[in-house]
Length: 536
Image (cartoon, rainbow, N blue to C red; front, side):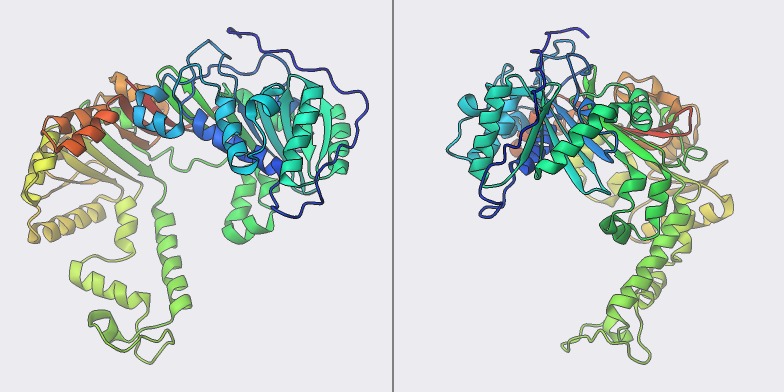
């Protein structure tokens, strides 16, 4: 690791002692432990624009002081001088309005003060960050939990154990809550009950989360942990009653995924949120590689493997709608009535299917069959950069002809062609000219013939563009995803001389370059999803 060496952590305390404080947890019902957990979230928001390359040196990490039985884990590193001495706020300052909203005013600002100062200002006005927190607060925070034991722990790195004891006590006295505390490898370990802390310390000394083979393998595969990271045992999470109720049968699929690891980090001029999961990537065989689209593509979306899911979701919606609201008199669908509509089914009534029948009659579409055809094996949308400057002055649907917008359907050719032809006829009846053509893999619907031909050409060179690779770095190893060339779109719109308020908004975001979401399959068939925002 390069960069400034962090302050060495304080040695572990001698015997563990019970330092409960507060008045039994009544009153404001605000656990400082909850506040520290909130700090992780707040810090993640502030840190979303921070730049780190490696944050695993300089002493123990939170996962080194939490037990191996932890089912979930969240970590935040607030050290602005770690890694390769990259300025923590450089990318954030490229969007001044956002920086001002967050409160970043200086490149040397202490992000810890931003996070904890906010908490103190709203929860403990009598305490002062510079006097009561800064003298002992380290750079790292961690939260871990054991779902079966209903155990929740917070690990706070400290630079001065004695000062931290006094400072943490004042924090909990302010909140009026009891707490348990002990020290291990330079961290204060906190929980609502002292028994939980004592048990956690004993368990961690035998085996820490860092010794958990699944955890270690996930983070080794994920790579750089960045400023914030997290991990969860999905099998344990799926057993939570709230999760099982919310997901129904899908909770079993969640459990099969095994685990998930995520990190918020920087990579060159981009901010990245990466998620590694054991979930099966059903789309990899059929998804269109965005890198093969035309070089002038400014926005693209590719979805695969969801045709059956869309049909199932549609059928489920109809069933749930009818179950919740019952049937409605057929006349109430087409005409307004001053009488309130009763949700009770009545003879000759039409539920959700009645509305669907009317939509089908008016449009010629067939639901959900046409939805299954639309998504087919895969669905790809591409928008070219030609004539985008005309968007602010677009006078009617006819103007769409000058824009390069194309939708490619991969699947059964006859069914796909029939669908796009029906959509084109329907659009034409409403003054929107569209091109519908067959392709080798299905069909295409576009605003003009050039756009139709371009998306049908599998030899595009978008993947060679630097802007594209800044947010889709895996290039042709990625499957599906989304891409937006923000910089080009903003530049094009500025050429149209938009109103001053629009121009001001665009100029404030002028340093944004691109946005991308991509998914790739790893060697062990796990899925790595990456969401990236790059700056110019």
